[in-house]
Image (cartoon, rainbow, N blue to C red; front, top):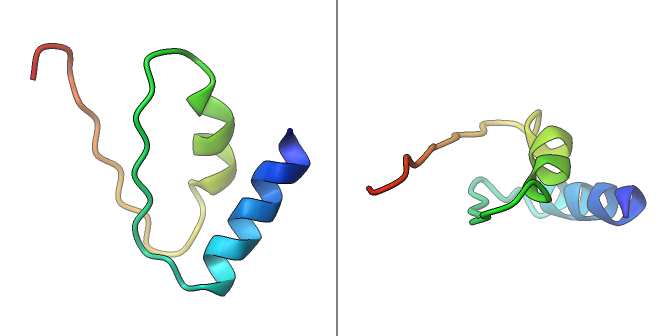
Length: 51
């Protein structure tokens, strides 16, 4: 799975994607977060329960 996430990261960087949005209720999002967080210009928005 890690190689697929890294391939996604390379694709996003090559296409100069500046915004990635994801929604998750479990822990599976952490792989994506940790491997994508150092892309140029990231902006992270955290939601709190009930908002």
